[in-house]
Amino acid sequence: MSRLPALFISHGSPMTALEPGEAGLRLAALAAALPRPRAIVIASAHWLAAAPRVGGAPQPLTIHDFGGFPQALFDMRYPAPGDPALAAQVAELLAAAGLSAALDPQRGLDHGVWVPLHLLYPDAAIPVVPVSIQPDLGPAHQFALGQALAPLRDDGVLVIGSGSITHNLHDWRHYSEAREAPYVRPFIEWIEQRLSADEIEALLDYRRQAPFAERAHPTDEHLLPLYVAMGAGGAPMRAQRIDAGIDQGFLAMDIYRFDGTP
Image 1 (cartoon, helix red, strand yellow):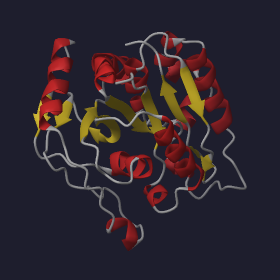
Image 2 (cartoon, rainbow, N blue to C red; image 1 turned 45 degrees about the vertical axis):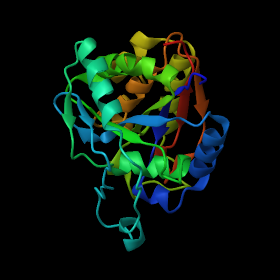
Image 3 (tube, one colour; image 1 turned 90 degrees about the horizontal axis):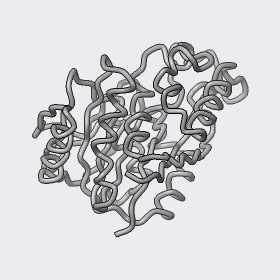
Image 4 (cartoon, helix red, strand yellow; image 1 turned 45 degrees about the horizontal axis):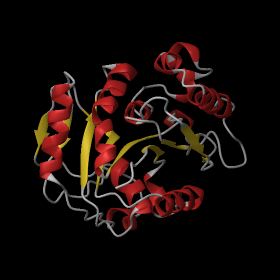
């Protein structure tokens, strides 16, 4: 099987599942361009743990980890199977890299997983293994986690980090499609430039170096999946940005694929 890329996906609001817009078009096109994976390993900004955890449920439930949205969103299910054997392999890869991981046989699929996967692979037939991120351990830890997962790309497994390239929910209602937050474009352009130049150290230090970093991300958790995808993407990363617009004027929906050598 051809080597798969690693992906970073900005999953946006849960409403993206019902109103996919430009992001839906870009993800559908991306899925059509890729070899179909035998399984997916995905690190979501909505599964936070002190140490790595790996979902090993044979049939993960769909988690509706949000409130205040239309009933149609709560009625949605993403009934993809799990893959306990792959989950055990993921835990072994992480342990071999010095990142001790625990298996969680009950973990379902939060909206950071099923919203983008619903748009990528709506048939929900590909096995999915979720992985937690560690918000207190920073970008370098997530990058190392991704590096440990990189060999899976040669085994038909699609490694995804699911978060958001900008994520400041304090700006909800302050901006709109007609009035864009002034920090969004400078921040996403800085990220694109550093990724294109393979400037990993600068990216790991984004909190100090990126323009408007604290406005774009008051907390880290939605950017940390980018580092998982970067680590899995190999060296050089060969980063390719896929512009999927800016939702509600403050949520940039950028997608990245990384085609480097593990």
